[in-house]
Length: 269
Length: 269
DNA sequence: TTAGTTGGTTCATATATTGAACCGTTGGTT
DNA sequence: AACCAACGGTTCAATATATGAACCAACTAA
Image (cartoon, rainbow over all chains, first blue to last red; front, side):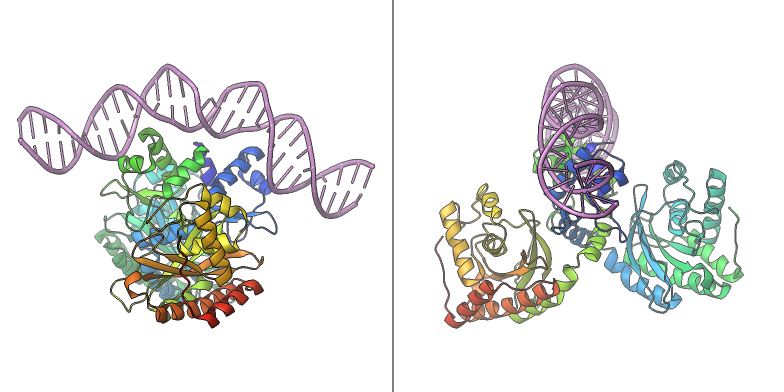
């Protein structure tokens, strides 16, 4: 791995639950030498990607990322074009909704929308979504470029005892995703969360990302599932349109067949 | 310079007017070797900081920055806390308003607000603001940490024939900024733009950034200047409050004295 | 005092970066 | 069609650059 990549990777260790990280702590998290980590953080700080909290000396993300994000959104407006549909989705399902975007073989979170209805919510605290263990990831594998599967199987980490940890389990889930048009993560990432997702496409005609609902498992009923699936198709269509794409016929057909069945297919991984 | 820093620097060459950059073009802009640039772009792409436009093969900012920005804003909410005041400022002055934040010795743009009133507007297309040649920069030099001046004088690039290009001219402008409480960039960055700025402070009690108005020079009248100065103080106070800081007495005093004078001091650089 | 943190620094070692020269394509011109 | 220039991408020897064990100084808790 290039030195630049190593430095960049440090940024991925920040999260909502750990927004500030000290030098020693970062060494442990990243598993690298202290001197190296320090120099990398210095380089990042020089460019404004991190800054030190003057009170605690801990590092946190810097202002440069704000500016780059503004520019990215001005160049490729994805977030703004997804937000209304996402809010409507969260509102209609009373559960947490989010959108992911694919770049290369990595699935990034773009934005979330939390429903105000329930006190307990699914909180999205992921920077990159594991392809094999999330509903969005399954969508990517099912509808995205073929090389994703190869990337995914290099690390089939088991998050719960239902996580698909070998290639056959995973391909079964992918197949299910393709035939129904929905990604389904029934407690395969977290024990308490049921995830459902639908693919989104952009102007190139290729898979661009996914829109998903993360539902607290205890609230998950067949009725809610039907609602989520219906609303997911609406949201996926709207976001796809806003991103300048169209839903492929195969996906629309899959959705149509699932709608008529109105049954919960629950494949055992 | 570290290899990581070199790679990071590539990102700063993207701008609103140049959102996509090809490999060869990037080599020319960055003044580095093609192989090196290519590897750096690869590393950046691997981490999602850039992506290739599939149609043109040109590179543009990637989705990872969106996510980092979301996290940064969740950690240190600056943008959201500045936006309303900024919009009000742009609205009241009918000119372009923006907010900058200081990190280390670099002044970054945080957000802009454009007034809908006029067809010709000042467009903010800067990623980092030169300290010696912008109103915000002068605020930083006047009210920020002492080491900024040393950093500024290392590159006193002359943007217009009014840009202060030696240390004495610059210190005179800084002094003027300190006594009036406003940064003033009368055609020292662009010939057609008059800039006025006021400092903003955060919970550490130190200078955190500046709020500024960039006014098309032909519209700049003493009456408009008075309006801008008044609105600037309002905006600076509100943003400072939202950022958890307080305006130092010295600055408030400077503003008060400037208000009563109501004269246009125009120092010749 | 001691022992264990922390953020930050040094320097010899050797590993990872560098750039000139090199491909194969593409798109426009003659 | 042949040509040329510019493009994105690749190779490999030379060496500049990253690396990490050991080392500070400051701080905290026991």
